[in-house]
Image (cartoon, rainbow, N blue to C red; front, top):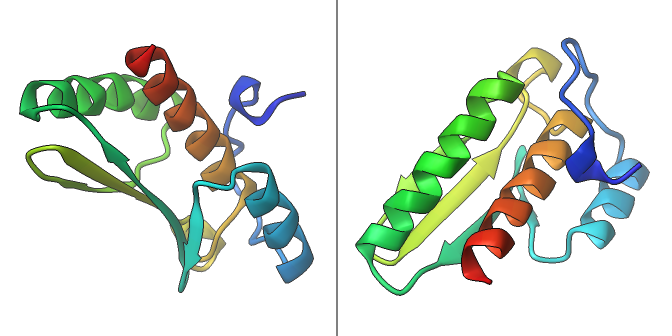
Length: 109
């Protein structure tokens, strides 16, 4: 099953190094930075940036898994980590990253 079709699971454990590498290979636009994965999305203007953030917020609410967002005029940086997994990366972060990518691709089409 595709990551974007899955849902976050309460209590998901931290991924080990091999699992992280495999998941990052499946989502090449994402980077591991310390204890989180992140990606920066680019837009043509602030209105498109905020529309993406609003669409992302709807997905986030449904998954009950919340990223750090840094919103600028034509960019939004999204960073995922799982606090309940000891502030490490879990499968929930990759599920939400894949869903964020799907939202971005849909809005960019």
